[in-house]
Amino acid sequence: MSTLTDRPLSRKNLAVTVATGYIPLIIATLIVFLPLAWMIISSLKNPGEIVTTTLKIFPEHASADNYVKAATKVPFVRFFANSVLVTVVAATIKCVLAVLTAYALVFIAFPFKRVIFILILVALMVPPQAAVLPNYVLIAQLGGLNTYWGIILPGLGTAFGTFLLRQHFLTLPASILEAAEMDGASHWRRLWQVVAPVSLPSIATVALVTIVTEWNDYLWPLIITTKQEFMTLPVGLTLLSNSDSSAQAWGVLMAGSVIVIVPILIVFAALQRYIVAGLTQGSVTG
Amino acid sequence: MSTIAEPKSSPEVPLPRGNKADKEVGQDRKAKSQGRWAFWLIAPTLALLAVVIVYPIVNAVIMSFQKDQGLDPVSKVFVKGGPAGFSNFIHWLAQQCGSGPCAPGTLGSQFWSATGTTFFFAVVTVILETILGFWMAIIMARTFRGRSALRAAVLVPWAIPTAVTAKLWFFIFAFEGIANKLFGSAILWTGSEWPARWAIIIADVWKTTPFMALLILAGLQIIPAEVYEAAKVDGASAWQRFTQITLPLVKPALLVAVLFRVLDALRMYDLPAIMTGGANNTTTLSILVVDQLRQGVNSAAALSTITFIIIFIVAFIFVRFLGANAVASATPNGKGKVK
Image (cartoon, rainbow over all chains, first blue to last red; front, side):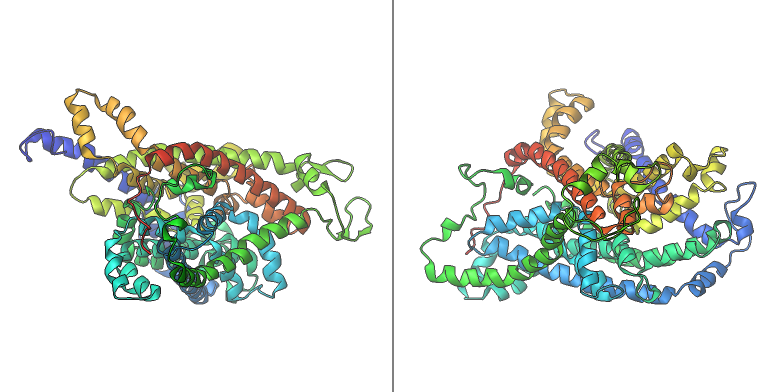
């Protein structure tokens, strides 16, 4: 808050910065990371150290035993591969469809445009669990139980990406497309050579939100899969806890949790620059 | 967020944006090819929405008026399907099973308590997340070293699968877990009604507040700094600046954030399902639908139709409420005129 005094390093200024900036920052960070740290610490303990009469924060002998147990008890590698496959396919389709639809809604004039946009908005309002049951019936009839396409298909029906990208496309200056139009570039080329490149931050935001949603999805994969070889990581994780009594299983469960969150954290670290930019730049404010 | 308001804008209200179809009148040939392009770009999405949104919803409504096949639980006679009238709906709304009220403990007796629980969770979590999220957004809007690192870091809980969040907090709130150790208490957190509810609420707030904070931050950033400077010169206190500048100006973005969160909270499933299994009065409507799915599909269809209507009404109220503000505050950038 440099507006309070003229000298940027005056004592008052420094105190205000610490009190209003760094202290809340530290509190917020602690609230976010302490539970996660507890998860990681616990995953390195043996059962005797987790259930104790007095509180012990750190393990005396950190070991990776829990990770070995978690990985051997349920097929984590398979769950991981399933999650990656489902997430990559679903997120790719969703993002491409969102870009195409948003482009048409903003840059092409056609009849019933408003009606179609309103339809898409209404789809955004439909609570997924209202569609869970009929979707289950539909997919089961089509033979989609315990298949990858059965897991992927119903999730594709969200309009969130279209909505977000449309909001962003509306803010692009008209001038950037005029040159391309003069050159007689088709809509297809205008989309991929002009609009998409300048919209990368927003597209990355949509990609991140979609990847997180798909990777985290629990209810639908839980319902549609009964065989382990098609389960995704979140579903498989709950399998881990069901297969053992709780007091013994805590360490293994926390190790499994760490395995589940590491990949999403890596993707997140790679794309976070964009999501913070994309989410705070008019995507919601319109 | 002018768009949220669009469904209710009537024909005589001039459209705020320049992308009306009549702008392109006089370019007939072009319009035709435009339409073709639009069709091919939009058709896949519309087809998908029809298959996975429209068809299921219509189907659910049809199914909810059908009888379940199978043995009648009361008369032990095999019942064929067929039209059921409103009986599936009455089963839930009046909590009637067969000829009398549903026995306590059966799914049929839980509709109103599940509705109450769902709304309780939605209201409490959204209020807490809005207040804490606002606080975090104001911190994040300040300029200081490490701001971008903070913004990225606080989003981490949002990126973690809810199943993992549930397991993590289940572990923290276990009887022998760290929550009891730290407070020196001996509470069976997930084993009785109110502690279980608060455990679920704390987990949800931890997970979702950061996302809320970012949505609010987006709203805060459209407020020009000069407005605050002017107010300061006029001698407005920090509290006056907050209530008379920040709040009114951030309201449209805030309402949208709250709407998204309410719709999300009304379908809460993962956290209570994993932390308590719905025991001790933590059964939400979503859990009830999924449990009923295993006992009778048509009855479950009626329940999901009711849920859909409830959520739709909530969304509708919000959009009406949002509408007036969103239209007034929308400043379209004169975009969309591109042919």
